[in-house]
Length: 276
Image 1 (cartoon, rainbow, N blue to C red):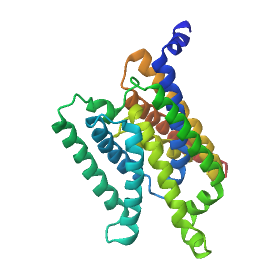
Image 2 (spheres, rainbow, N blue to C red):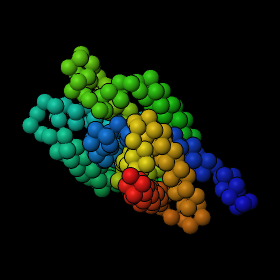
Image 3 (cartoon, rainbow, N blue to C red):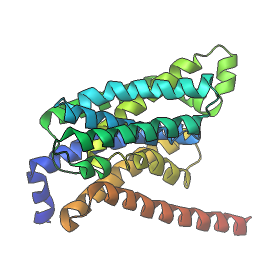
């Protein structure tokens, strides 16, 4: 037990814990809408853009997060416009932007001559979170949470019946943009901890897990947040005791919980059928 509490005496773990919980909450909130709209892979596309932007920033000795956030937001607008006003479908637009950004980022790293640890940005690292990044992450996470709460009814409407909302004069394009911006911020903030290739798991897994047990939207949202934070915390503790990669460990914890909840859901359904 003493060893467990001693873990929190390390500054880098405290920083990682605060940032991780903040990102887990934001990703779960936004993930509920994105997964139910079948648009969850936008997070994967934006994370690749974030990697490219961070690579350019590091090569130029600029602040990675400060540079990457506006670039990723612009990319989210580009994906929306490509999907709406061209012959490129949503998934193709995401793949196009994602692959191009990843390629550009790697070329920049390869040709810059600087010593950049690519693995940490691809798969995440619990080390190296600065106080400035901590403040930025927490501040922007608070903005994401407040925005979600204030726009809860609009996000609910656009998630389940965007066409009806549009037909009644609802500003669907505006709310889609807001969701994209919030998703962009969350993805960039979570990249350093989870990695560009794994951050999407925080958006997808908690919602799918929550839906195995709950059916109502509000219940799924709350359960997603709890699951996301719990899985992050378990993954971080495992990282401390077993020295496993933080991002990969969190993904595996989420996967294990999902499998357990899927099995539980099937058992509960069988019990209900027998009772009826």
